Image (cartoon, rainbow, N blue to C red):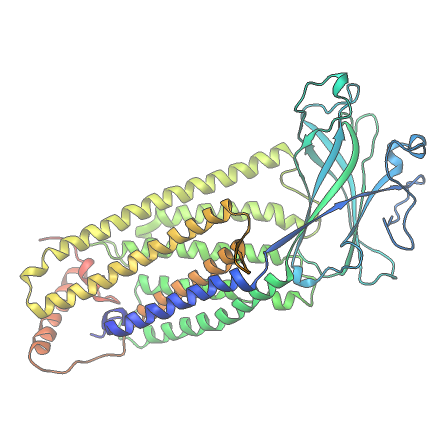
Length: 537
């Protein structure tokens, strides 16, 4: 019986493999810390107040040779002759002497309102602001603007006034929450133009206060980070693909059909391969607005498969698992994962799916949409919590059962006892590595939340956020590769016949026959076989 590589590889080779994995993990972190810039950049634009007395649907440009007629403040004499509907807030993205690039991948925009307090024109509670928004683009500074989308949207306006609302405090500004405005899934053009109008009549935009200025905060992925990220995906993609194909080829050479654990490892490799596909290369030449949705689907498929694999990996090594090698034995754990994933998928489709045709849409724009979104996220979170409680219980049972098996080792012959000790130690070490990977993800996330984005050490700047992203991405690739490699069938089909080794072979053959009688099937590893027996002793 050949067993898996984790059981037959020498300790020296395993230590060397572990050392290589650690080096590659450190390199993944350092690439993000030292080479990649911050993942995103935020640029603040002050909207220009353009005059549009004719209220036409043309595009008003804030600067350049064809810039609009504009006012700098609503306190100017000219502004006193204008109506609110005569004002269009215009923003040119990017700033002068700069260009946007497909390497930016996406562009988000949020609005920040400067609203002054007036006793006779204060902000009402639960008020909605109506925005007539338009987005246009062009690829040089001389061509005409091409309309991309126009839409009339409503957003909740949430502001607080920290001092008493009296005449003495008139002119002081409210503190308003940023308003989600736009999400563009592709930056395929060099220049973008945003026109905003706040239409006013008897029922629209009443009770929104006296707006003085509008700031647009544009957020996009840094091109330098995109290049590092795509390069890592280009390196990992063929590596994991070849490892997955090699693993399944090894499985197909065995005389038995693949068991559930081996199928789960195959699914894990396939999902990691799909996540690694560097589709960003193609998005550089095409206006693919669905790239954000694709990335979310890739990540969701991988994490769902990973969670299911952890359950199966633990459950298949339980001694009291009478229905092993059946996916139905894990119906409620896998069901929780699928339920939570489905909720997040529905939420993603209801938000980013609509962005494919209307980048100004936001699921958070209405109270109903916001409540549904929060409900979906909470239910998905509850599912994840229940899943982890179940997983922790299964891991505890696995270690308890292995501890029970360890108590039987002193009664075994020396050769057999030493072999089982080595096998059990390697399995427990792999389980601890699995838990360490999950713990590192949580630790990196916490560090990312409390850090300012970068640390300085001498002449070097460490980008913590970039290091977190590249480190976690590298860690999961290395973890999947380790599982695939160590659980592949070993090529060592025989041993030298001498002294204790012949006795070991006889004992292993007897153990194998006992395992077949008890469990009714063979498994990929010795640990799988000895822990899978029903504890009848």
